[in-house]
Length: 93
Image 1 (cartoon, rainbow, N blue to C red):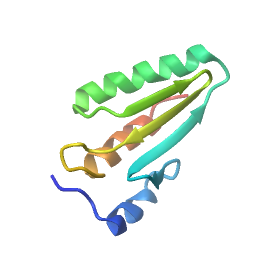
Image 2: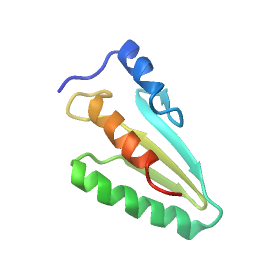
Image 3: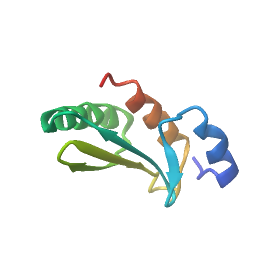
């Protein structure tokens, strides 16, 4: 597995419109109406991440969740990040 170059990353972003490429990672912020909903969503992400053996950086701040995806082994964004982003997007809010 290799890190994607910036053109490849930008080309793939059209497949995950809720995400942005910023600071060398794929990023998404999600707002919830209740704190517990954000924590439940984190749990759902954790289950998927374990199955994919690919673990995102998750930052919870009351009713919002900030997600950052990078592949540490390649020191950049890889196809693994896009696969996890798509799986996260498929989780029902």
